[in-house]
Length: 296
Image (cartoon, rainbow, N blue to C red):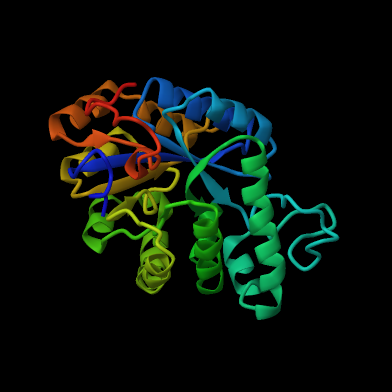
């Protein structure tokens, strides 16, 4: 998958922090998790309340790969309501719930408006001076069968090389799921598994790469030190992504920040022989890989 990079082959671990730009507290947590922890990538929300501060965080950290966190639910659009009247309310906000938004977007008539908004989100980040290396989405709504192919086409046109497929194997979910999430991990597995197999074909068609494994879905809001160590110990190759949601404003976000900054977790990275990398490094955008060892 990454044999055409200057770095050769091996086992690479991408630690991605979602929601950059959502709030000042999220931005500060992501900066801390990168500066003093193992975070190598972040995904920015173009319509986030703290977007400009998120851009500042990104531009000051050249080793932090930045992706677009496409937002089509639970957030504010970039375009005004008048341009996408069927997607947002009068205040410019999307449907709050991802399930409701997903059902709404089954209407083919909405696709032109969705495409305009997605392009506007890419363009806002680009105009801010941020070079994008990957793409994913808020609440994984990009996995929607009518949206994914469109997003692959736009991302390829923009020179983005990686897209997320949040698939986790059932044995992993059984071992690591949080009781606080109840049956949700199993529902997500039943939904995202088939969608992942279907959408993988579109990613390949447009020349986008996907990580071999992507972890974090079954423990959304519940990632801790033990969870990270368990995945690092068993990380296959060549590319594994773990996504997290550090946030100084919430208990779960602070717990995730502590895990991402843990000395024990960094030590496990060193002992496991995996190389920490951002998606920019895996496509040759940056000159060298981070050393296998956790801290930057």
